[in-house]
Image 1 (cartoon, one colour):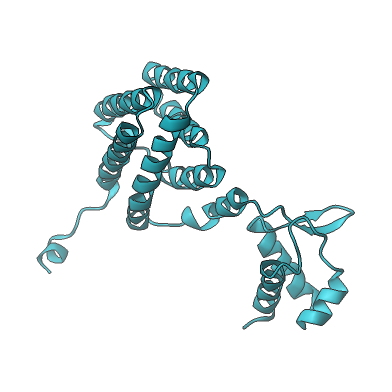
Image 2: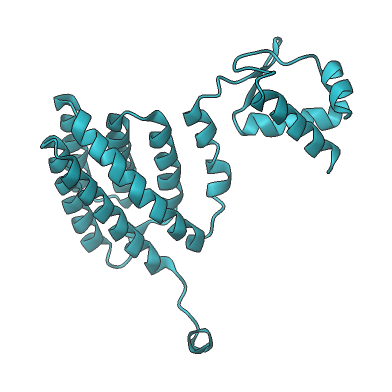
Length: 233
């Protein structure tokens, strides 16, 4: 194990065991280096790694503090690695997304307010009115984010946002069949929003799952063709 790894895992252990609690200021560098048996350079690199993960927060002039460790903040750091997944890996993640989108849609149907429903249909109308694929993609993201927010679990909302951010790198609406995909997507959105407005969790879950499954099929259009010799093997 390298010195940086030793420092990283040592700090993680302190936080995981509660020795360093959420919001607490970390001990001075010298004390930590002595306890962990590492140099200041290794310790600082470990702190940078934990900062990237949203676990600690350096504050100019005040020191380094353990973050609030909110689940949604920690989950959000998954974007650092999830965005590196190739398309084959992303398609595996879609099985998880289908389950979670269905769950949050059901929760949104049970908890929706007239204001939330109005926002959903306003986003749908904006999607249907734009001819810009990039705008449509952004509005699509906001539509699903609104459903997740209405579902009431910030951690799930953040996780799904991370999943969607990776899939948005593949602009399905720019494919040759883009206009037809847009039409089908808009129809799916209306079915989903209507189920939520009707406060029907079962219908909302089914609509969300079907919509994500459809998007997964569209993403497969970006897969490179299988070579004949691979297919034969």
